[in-house]
Every structure is written in structure tokens, then in C-alpha cells.
Image (cartoon, rainbow, N blue to C red):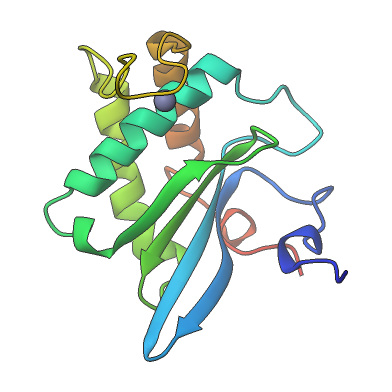
Length: 158
Ligand SMILES: [Zn+2]
């Protein structure tokens, strides 16, 4: 089997940031997959499982309820390596185009205080594994990295 595109990115030179992971064309529609990289691969601890799960629930809820972006949200979910998330949006987009949306998402998570959406046995496969405090902490840290990002946090290392 061929090595897929996302394994060809040099993860040893990858910083936390926002990257276009791929663009796929379906008929006249382009879907852009973003790599929301919270952690520097293989250089720092990954997001712990309960926080990752809470970020998934909150992120999906926010994006699918967003007043302008929700019709363009195809998917949001965690990376198996726990260093970040993928979001797939309709449209031919670049990283700077989604920074305002991501900042809005992170600010919402940082301020979130209430029952975690979907954290109930009838709504989730492992509902009690959640950590809102750590999810907020991770969102805050990532938001700090995205405050004024240089090109090295917006484009994959060439
Ligand atoms: Zn869940």
C-alpha cells in the first residue's frame, strides 16, 4: 500500500498550529481537511484522553451550531495520536480563513461552564470519561499559540 499524504508530513519539524492537511474534490465541491495541531509531535505530552473527549464533544457542538459555518462543517474529531483534531469544512480554504472561527471556538470552550453536551449514557459510548478543566486548559494554551501565528504555524514544513 502507498504511504498516505498525512504520513508524508515531516512530524519531526511540525509545530503546534493550523494546517491544511488535504483538499478533496467531489464533483464541483472541494472539502478542506484541517490539522488542528495542539501539540508538537513526539516532543511533549499528548492531550490526555478525558480532555480530548471533552474537547471533541464541545468542539463538535460549537461547530455544528455555528450561525454561519455550521452548514459547511463536515466533520470534527480527534487524532488517534492525541496531538490534535481534524476538522473538515466545505470549500477551498486556507489556514488564515479559519483562524477567526478557531479563536471563537477556543474562547467558547475556555469560558464553557455547564454540563458537557452529550455526556450521558444514552448519547455517548464512554460518557463518564470527561475532563472539562483540562479541556479548558488545553484550549487556552492552543489559543495562545494562535494569537499571532507566523507562517511556520500555518503551513506544513516544506
Ligand atoms: Zn463521547
